[in-house]
Length: 117
Length: 102
Image (cartoon, each protein chain N blue to C red):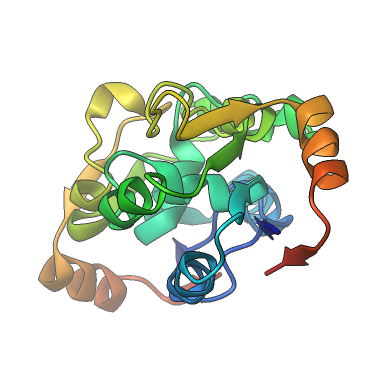
């Protein structure tokens, strides 16, 4: 089954970002094909220099680096959001593909299940 | 009067807050938790915050900046927009008669 997980939350606001990450890893463990799309403020989840421990949270951000081990290769960033925060590939903890709205639509058509968080 | 913003409940929350702060001479603003994202130099509020800071001090909780990995990417103007630690946060709450949390 092909899954697309659309991330839309700040990293530390609540537990959504952390649980969505756990979900992606869990799905992959059960051999589902997982793609992730980060929209708007969710891109901030991937900033390299974060230290969740300072907010008494587990450093789940480091777990994004485990994607290759879990065979998660399809990571996408919404174009507008990427440019809104003036980010460079270097700022983020993992690499991904920047896609525009049209490509997003095509991506949604390609998968079986879309989970928007 | 001390205004505190911690969450970004709606995009316009800072607009409302700034509008009110401008009307009060001795008011200042403290941003913590996710509201610290407002102070990113690339944020659409950067200009408004800079203007506000000319007459009203703006404080940002440093721990929350570091937790979110954006230290060094936010507005800083000496004596206008400054980082504070928890101790200074508490001192601010003692200095002001009224505290409004948005």
